[in-house]
Image 1: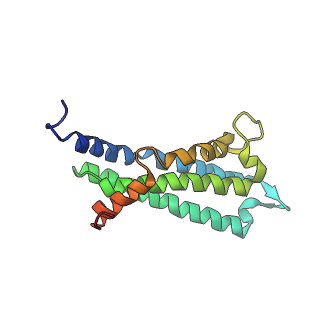
Image 2: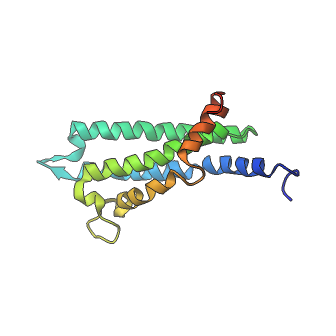
Image 3: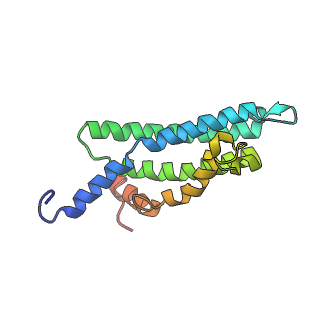
Length: 166
């Protein structure tokens, strides 16, 4: 037996908090975003790189800002764990932001790169080795793994903000 009798649910819930506080989501998103920026610098349309288009720059800046928010949430969760605290609301916020950001980076990247962004890794012409297309396919599932985002929002409301149960 793990823990004390009758505390199994709490033990599993705490284990899920640690799972949600995983930094790998940030590193993958950051790597894919950096690759997208490089593609935008290299690909030209109408004699200019995509990176020079003000609308694309705006999209990239918004994604970068959200990825930085995720990094800070990851660091806060890591700090809390280091302090012996369980990052329940923080890990839930991290999970929601990461899963929704994964979808957004894939969507925006495919829109920016056009048809090439939809190519999978088997294609020699696929930018970023097809990671955008792969992320686009996987992203919807991430909203459910480790607890659905709607449940995570309830956890944030109750345990993070002290709001009553809905």
